[in-house]
Length: 337
Ligand code: SF4
Image (cartoon, rainbow, N blue to C red; front, side):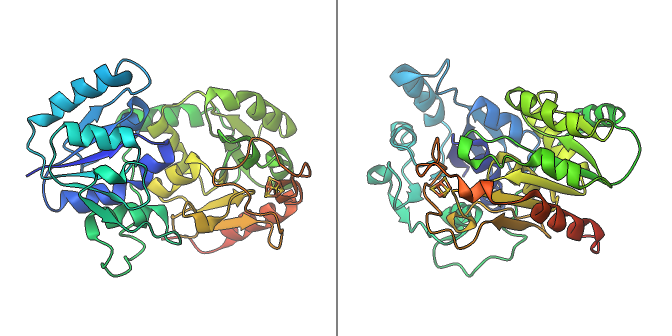
């Protein structure tokens, strides 16, 4: 019987759900309820039979949309719903779809409507937490490869990146930088300084159109060595571009997880959050960087809108030279398998 996974959360969470999808696919067909943007990320994933788009903030908003989707799911005969996103809305959807077995975390908002509650392991990586929805809490610690996400850019994504990279003059290794984050205090402010410090490398700036002003500032610090790709690629093509980079430098945000999905060594910068929350980079050779010994850190599960103490030392004191040294180590080290 098919399984249903409900994942309508942030893009990073969608990427981190792919090990769960792979494990479930070993047992039978897997369908995924996902946002339109999330669907664009899971396109081509061989573990997924059908992507069922739930535009919860658009055409499927409100009770009408939820009821319509529940009716659609009702006839599919799912053996279980795996609640990778833990909202009450998702739980109501699974129950309204009359899926008898509903598996989710014991801390989720929708847990009262689950039939099986899996302990939310606070100290585990979130990819492992999600994987345990299928593997169970008693399963032994998984090998890193088991919980490493996978993304599958297609031929059109590769062609888009081929065309884009023709704009970058020949030169040294390509380092990707992703300056954005939807949480303002998670943005490390020194990407331009990093670019200036690493004059042996070429750079591509990865992000959405919202990151373009920042990308333009970064590009202006090293004309001819920086290609601004912000707002020019689909999500999977962005993953493909990250896959062409020797190293990615990113914040604690979605590009870190895109890099995990294509295996690019990543230096992830943590400010008000910490890797112990479970969202560090998973590609081999990756590192997490942050200011240690700062008493106020971490201060928020996602990063506050502004530093509540006003000094923003968790990011402000993380000098570009320190990150540049890590990048150089990765560029000069043995190739990562
Ligand atoms: S309170 Fe500390 S951890 Fe939080 S944003 Fe400010 S400096 Fe960073």
